[in-house]
Amino acid sequence: MLPFPQRVNGPVPLKGRGAVANVQGRYEVHAREHFDDGWTVPGLGPEAKALKTVITDEIAKTILTRNSSPDIPFNVSLNPYRGCEHGCIYCFARPTHAYLGLSPGLDFESRIFAKVNAAELLRRELARPGYVPENIAIGVNTDAYQPCERERRLTREVLEVLAECRHPYGLITKSALIERDIDLIAPMAEQGLAGAAITLTTLDGEIARTLEPRAAAPARRLRAIRTLTEAGIPVSVSVAPIIPFVTEPEIERILEAAKDAGAVGAHYTVLRMPWEVNPLFQQWLHAHFPDRAQRVMNRIRDMRGGKDYDSDFSKRMTGEGIWADLIRQRFTKAVKRLGMDGYMGRFHKLDGSQFRRPLVVPKTVVKPASTAAAQMDLF
Image (tube, rainbow, N blue to C red; front, side):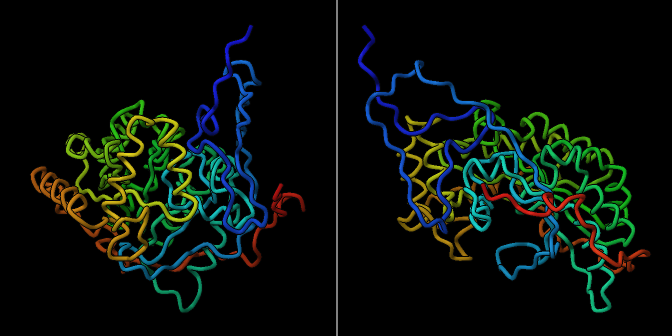
């Protein structure tokens, strides 16, 4: 006789994926809810199949995104991809997949859109008569060096255009693939035109495997910091996001490791959970840290005025209250002690005076090889 079936509390995490389910986007008309009828027997049902990543070519209409947010250190950003296979559960960009009729959950990390005309659009933008150069942040919404970049090379094409035009830029990534483009970045850095930031959320490989499942391991990111530094590229470390009782105990150790690897600056943000990120993160938390899930959420609410999230510009990155202030003090004192406080405002220090317009400007935007490649598949 089979043992009495145990109830399954929510979906089972998939190996190599951050989200544990495909939550609904906020624009969907029909609501669906997971329900366990009590007949599920662990180990006897069909095994969860590996989720294959699908890359779809996209012909973008624009490539530069401008913002006026007072808490962001840049005004212009560029993202060669939509969606990110790294699968970081905390990613603030997840809700953008809802605009495509897709889920901010598993779809965000398995349905990737590659802007195949990114370099051409950038070239046309830089050639405009009224264009005024501003430092461009690359890889902000989604990582410009996610796995598909190895074959697509869209980020490298963008860097080639920026090098030709001597246009300042900053890269932010959690991938060691950035080392591939040192030949382009280092000469620009030597002229004060380029810098990089490596995101280092945790030093614990076990936590990283579930928190950022397809990003480079923490030790590999530290090696990337060292490699970039040795090539003459200034590197700062982004300790983001800080998650109470998960990554928060490591703040000082992360900064010390980054300093030892050669990082010259550092900044941080605390966890923020806009829109669909909130249920996704809480699902992940209960799946991987059930023993401390409630404690983590209580501390987050302490830093958000009793709410799960507060989007106010003065609070969303750092939080408020005694616990947020304690994190700020710990971070500030550690950065000062390590001598990493001299490279703040990294994007504002790049030089835009050397800009020159592109030599060649395409007359038409590159079209996909087939009609099917241009049409987004929503199903």
